[in-house]
Length: 103
Image (tube, rainbow, N blue to C red; front, side, top):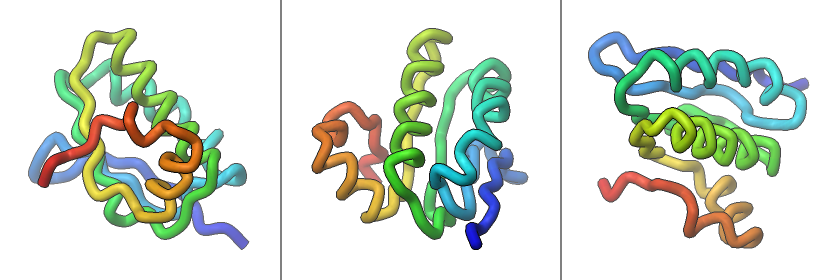
């Protein structure tokens, strides 16, 4: 059974916190939330530290986020991308496209 995914705005900052599983079973549930956040925030800082599992659909969600931010002319940075997701990105050549935090 998959763990639900949650996307919420941090209480002390404008960091978008993603938790749970980013998989084929869960990603479609949050696409609308992603678009709403892109439209409502000036800068998109996405923290993935609480993502417990991901597959290629999770990576596709990040690519969706990149496209939405680019279309809206918003700055986007991903923080704490799980190693599983980075491995998929590296294998597919997408790792160079991901705007990653340097910290």
